[in-house]
Length: 299
Ligand SMILES: NC(=O)c1ccc[n+]([C@@H]2O[C@H](COP(=O)([O-])OP(=O)(O)OC[C@H]3O[C@@H](n4cnc5c(N)ncnc54)[C@H](OP(=O)(O)O)[C@@H]3O)[C@@H](O)[C@H]2O)c1
Image 1 (cartoon, helix red, strand yellow):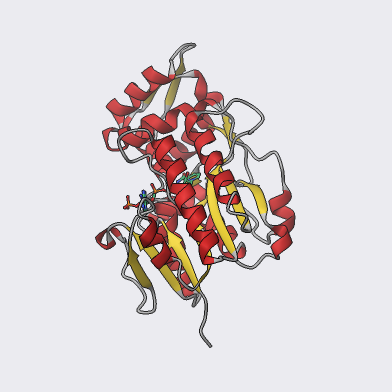
Image 2 (image 1 turned 135 degrees about the horizontal axis):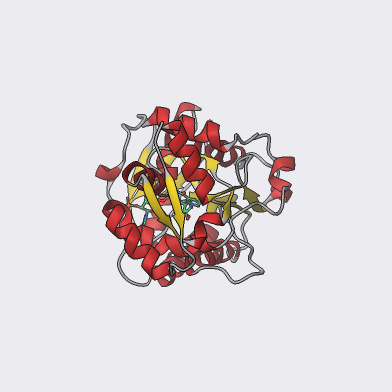
């Protein structure tokens, strides 16, 4: 039988790369749309197809989406210079149009957690805007909204690791008391695979997170404890997002470029307010300690 193809965009990225391996291991017929195949992290299964393309090149999208039933949209433009919000809007429109023309059964997207009724950071509103542009296609869209993803190689986890590994004493701004609900990469991948098979009527937005709601300070303390490191935090009342971003750039130059765009989102709580995902999906997310322990074993 001619098995339909599942398309992964962003396969050279963190989540897309992990998902690609997981789908290959489960025997799915996978195609990945990549700008540069050399950036793929793991050797591919022989059955996996690669289409070299770009979300800003609609023709390449038509080729990538041929005979595809479900596509994962795991792309963002925060690594680029310039206005990433605008670029992500155009990219999502291109993908949404191409997916409608190709007659896809479903698009699965990972965006960011954050209460859409409140004012959000540029980064979080942009992530939610992308979800709504994908829904404008009229297709069945499953959008997962996640807080930080814990796993070796995830930008948000690597920033925490770099800070704690380098700074035994930290002057901490107010945002370290903001709550997040980190999710382990294995749990996110489990949700993404389950999303291929939920009934059509169950599409929509799902807020997902690990078992624990924790402050950024607690995440850093948990990480430090598990690494046997000393961590002393000195809270300061005022440290603007701009100063925080300069500080981050000094300590973690490798992550400074995207980190500066992300740090604004840390001022907003990213916890699950709607538990519908736990009723519809079988995934039973782990807590923060187990997630960090797994990430440390992977690195
Ligand atoms: N990681 C987290 O902690 C986290 C948390 C919550 C939500 N999310 C969401 O999950 C999604 C994926 O995140 P991630 O962490 O896996 O991102 P990532 O590692 O930064 O990967 C981004 C991917 O997008 C691709 N891309 C960028 N511009 C493109 C273009 N014009 N055409 C084709 N591909 C393009 C990149 O390809 P190149 O290799 O060519 O640059 C890369 O594969 C995003 O929507 C993100 O907001 C992530």
